[in-house]
Image 1 (cartoon, helix red, strand yellow):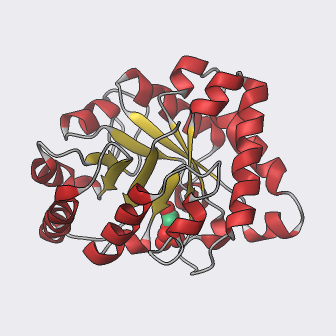
Image 2 (image 1 turned 90 degrees about the vertical axis):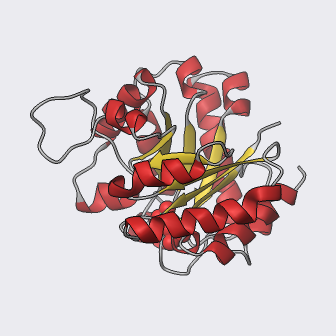
Image 3 (image 1 turned 60 degrees about the vertical axis):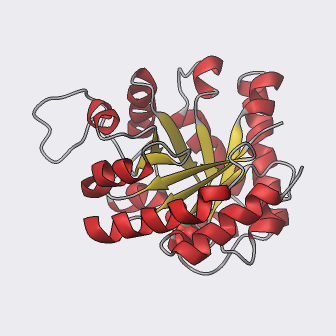
Length: 257
Ligand code: PGA
């Protein structure tokens, strides 16, 4: 059985004090949460990581960054290394988010380097893949997904793959209020799992967790996560408020599959 994982991607929102407030609010809400049935991860901006780590200290709530560079250190102005993320208290890192692919030149090749560097330092990569609207409308969804998966996972062993999480995020559903239907989501998640079965083996494909991301809200989490191949959610907008994110996490923790 795969344990669900819900991650909040705070994107470029929240000053340090606002991030501390949000983390404290969530910590209170999750005081009684059954962490045996769900993993929870918060992904603030880089500048708030250490402070949020302090708030989350001695809780079961995980901490993640939103990006990483692949070198340990060096003359790479503006970049942050996996060593530095560990140093700030992170256990997770989002890699290859569509906004990074779209606005900052992220490619499957850079995603692959970032995954390897993160694994080397014991960070759990949350690897994002997903098609845009034009690709979906021209029936290229599976082709794009295959490209993202094969390119991003080049030379990653089955053992290492099991230390990652995959996030299927259709670009047309991100921040648009348009959620993929549970059936559309299940269809792509199953495609990803079948592809991983071919690339690796049955056991690996059965064990890896695949999250859905794109306008996840308290109102749609149950029907999404009830699908057999949907193992959690990567939440953007609705992760910025205590009420909405805690409602998503608590409902997810109660879904028995
Ligand atoms: P959204 O963002 O929930 O605001 O659509 C999801 C994401 O980009 O990870």
